[in-house]
Length: 207
Ligand SMILES: N[C@@H](CCC(=O)N[C@@H](CS)C(=O)NCC(=O)O)C(=O)O
Image (cartoon, rainbow, N blue to C red; front, side):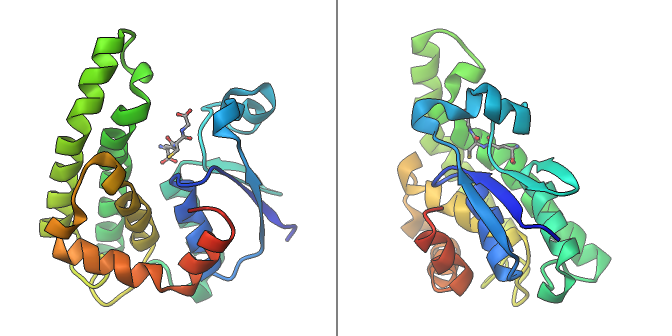
């Protein structure tokens, strides 16, 4: 297999893919997309991902986008890493948490910096930005009470949902959420920071 290329920007959800690839001991090349220069909207990058977003994972099979799908691909191509539980209900529970993170928490977060997706007026953007600490607090509350069994999302079993939740949890302080109010989530984040796969992602500039 030729080396895969992960297109990413620092601090983004692409970091969840880097962590999963590290957990799987997969070989890959990291290709930074320079958001400060608007590179995600360049013709060259849109040829990789027409959505103008990261992550995108390129292999000899083609390009994959959408974090959940990429994570599932990493797990399926590296079964020895055991990143998806064999039990169907547990696997679906893992995907339920990942889908919540993608469709609700990430979208809440995006209202802080990407309001132009939904509205044109500056006052609309300001209104959306002002709401983020509440919507992300709501997401953190849901996760703490219903999605995170502890110590990992599925309890003692580490899965794809963990790097996903970890990256979203790193956004909370910037979104005006006091993670100290969520003891399970705070303990989870602390534990994740100690993992080799996370330290590697940090050293490689993903976080
Ligand atoms: N649904 C996509 C969302 C990806 C996404 O929105 N990524 C953000 C970074 S966290 C991005 O690329 N933003 C660039 C932009 O909006 O210009 C996924 O889960 O992979």
